[in-house]
Image (cartoon, rainbow, N blue to C red):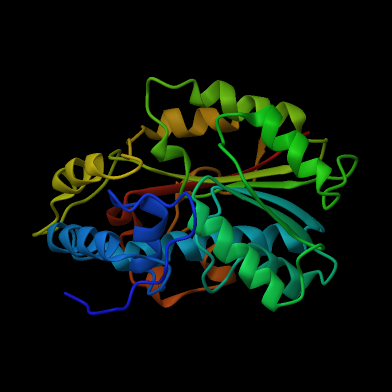
Amino acid sequence: MTTQQDPVAPEGVDLERPNVARVYDWFLGGSANWAIDREFGAQVLKQFPEVKTFARVGRDFLGRGVGYLARQGITQFLDIGSGVPTVGNVHQIASAINPDSRVVYIDIEPVAVAHSQLLLEREGLLGRHAVLQGDVRDPDDIWKRALETGVLDPRQPIGLVMVGLLYFLGPDEPVHEMVQRYLDLLPSGSYFLSSHLTEDGVTRKAGDNRENVQELYKKTSAPFHLRSRAEFAAFFDGLEMVEPGIDWMAAWHLDEAASRASARFADDPTFTGGLGGLGRKP
């Protein structure tokens, strides 16, 4: 096991069980994680050796989606479940295309919020962008506080981002109603970018023990839940889907920014088990 030195935990950080945002950070090669997260990540890796590559596929999908929106003229983003900052954050991708881009980041995990604030402070961008701690389950509170930052203009289209988030909300929660509330709050011309894990049409390979991984995640701060393609597509009801509609994350607009991780699954993107989609509010 790694001998990485753990930093002092910010106030409010739970180190009694693995945290999904910090584990994801470890999968991506980050340092905002603790021993309990790394030990859990190593267990997942034993059951599913491709998991680090899959994490990169999800990050690449986020980058291609944000890049597409920036090229459509979207200059403001609300990124909910933004996680621990790593290479290719929303503000970095968007600003490379539209220098005036603005982002409000939302996450429930204190480490993610603290590291995001530190990153923006180091880049001299805190103020132009904002970071808030909040729960996606409360759309009205999130929307109210996001607007209070002064970063977002509710009269102009907004790119709402929920990538790598919705599958941490269970079937006993009113997730579709929650997403619909966010869509209702968005101004016309806004976009919704999201992803989800599924078993629909997924191919398997030797050593692929996904069921064991799902069991392992029940020990974390947020177990994950699979949904069908149809259930994921329902999140976009009432929106105009950007071609090709709901697609595998590893294949979605891959020609725009081919990455090593996503290209690895170009011949069989179903293996990743990750769906992505982008819809526009009329």
